[in-house]
Image 1 (spheres, rainbow, N blue to C red):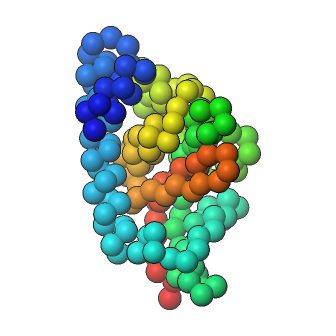
Image 2: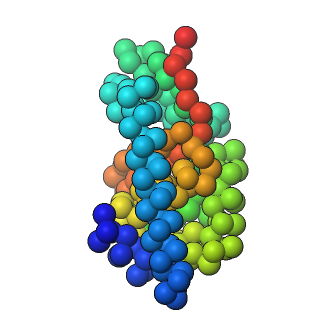
Amino acid sequence: MKKLIASIFSLFASGANASDDWVDFVTIAHNSLSEKQESIMAEYKIGEHERFDWDQENGTLVFSNDGKPVVIAKVQFVGSVSTKSDTWLWSWANNTILDNVKDQMHKVKEYGVSKNYEALINEKWSADEVDGWEMTSITSYLLNAKGAYRTTDKTGFTYMVITDIHWVK
């Protein structure tokens, strides 16, 4: 964990105090999301359902078993990592993402501006899947999300935070 954080801060933070602040912030955000993930996975069995589908228009992530929805989560798209270009792209900079699933992401960028955290300000930068999880941890922390989810396809990973979740009755 310390090696990961040291790598991240060396890439994105400038100045000794900013670096220390960045490392501390990433650590706090990571630990916060880890606790939330344990809880949400236990309570809603995230990762155990047969299928998931996300619906940008409704801003939902639907988990199903036997073709029937069992858990519905409201989401904000955080960003994506391309394994073809090895880059991170924030959802707020991605014109293929509908506004309703990124309408809270300005808070993350504004926080980055206020702290001069380049990783939160620059729309696209060199990254891997670990960076994606770190940006998702930060987003979860700043938006007080309930958890996070990552989808995978042939070109990389899409990260989202879960802002609300419930069992289908």
